[in-house]
Image 1 (tube, rainbow, N blue to C red):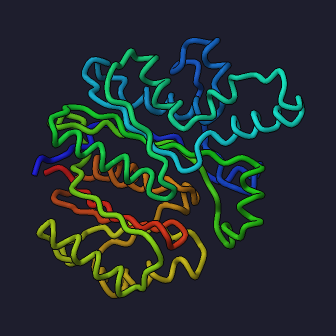
Image 2: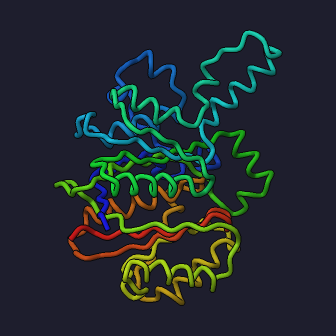
Length: 318
């Protein structure tokens, strides 16, 4: 099977709780040096600036003609622009509406903006599959590379606003959970380069509530399909978010399936959001790139509110 290499990574995420919000807010860079067009920058909402800047940083060393596809993912999309447009509808009684917030509220805005800025006339797709949005984008990227593409830019972006935070609280989705946001992009390649961080081995997803035994069976089957056993997993990365009911399955799998592996979490750093698994991939790829050890293999298991489950297998480049 054609290997897929993670050749470059970029991330905009929370460094630490700021105290300004009851959720983890992303630590944004100075966009002036990344998005140089001031007029364009002013028209961009916060999530668009985060996504575009992160994507541009990821391909800054690669000529635009070398990018064969841009594939993005988001769980909730451009929330601030959507709120702005809906508020304008109410305030102006559906008359004299500014079309800009509506245009920029669509889910594919970020991928389109990157393509326009870099003049990339290639396959451009956005996935909005709730807690499996990033995994869908990653799977499509792997398929593109295995079908002949040399370089694919894949990324995930989600934001949180005060209104969306309040709504999620009222729905009971954030009980004992720290909400978050962020943008992560990956330059995936057919061939390794000097900057290659790791190799993306495989992805598996499934939905609905499952028992720990059923999930363990799926993990065994997934590893067997890649000629691996649980004992060969060096890092077991889980999406623990602080909710005891949702974290129980992670604890059981750590003790029963991967007692010898290094146990790592990531939502304590980035918070909970639909595409948080992209931060896990970024964290593992970054650590593999900095590690001196060879032959390490990481399995990321994440579930989004016990409904959307994903397994991502990553190996450090030999």
